[in-house]
Image (tube, rainbow, N blue to C red; front, side, top):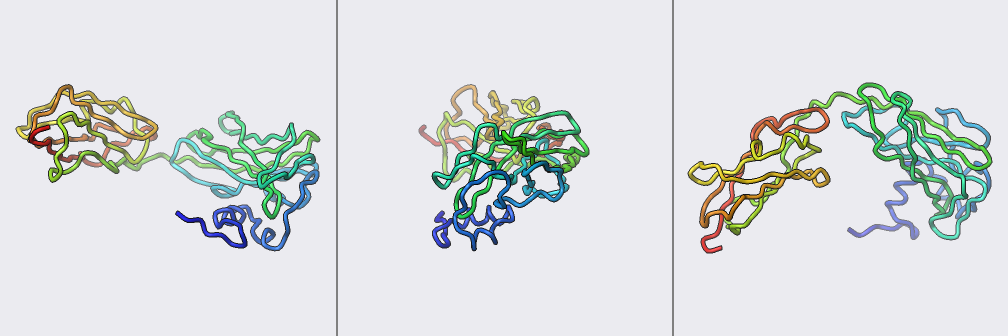
Length: 274
């Protein structure tokens, strides 16, 4: 996909500035040098306690409160530019001792956020705190930025984890259809819409039958990265035969234990000579 540019700046970058509330400033200010403390390059946090010249703002997925049925949440935002930061290129250098951390005050979990210094048009620190684990109910999560001089920026968001009641679905499968025959050594893949409970995916819940409805011996594995189950026939399939794959409602998702709303069935056909 081609990235459109405006005055030499990518539209994707302008969207990020807009998300941080900095687009209006970026369009009228030249490239800012990096100074000490909060020199106005990052907007002050209006909802969290700050000390010294620090400031921090949570802007993604939103500020204040957010709801999700997922087991984790990823937060993003911007924070103050510390003394000693430099801008030798589009991406600047932060001084030692500058940290951005998160803590889930409801669970006691803590961690570090990644951070970087943008130096295009205007200097500001951006950060991302990924995969923060959530307990059911309200999670009060505080993100804190601190530099070597003791300046602190801090903001808090309440993330409410709701029960997951949405059943998973099969989003793709291969091979599918009888118009284009496949080889006798073909393996079958089924991709789900979300992370699945691996213990529920087996040759019992993902099965293979020939065109006479005879079960075909196979093993089934699940890959949590690709969200896919793979069925391996125990021997070469018969030639010129239509096979049926069935994913039963015994498979369940990992977050809520929800089953498929209905069995998912598809067919494929092997070739005549291979």
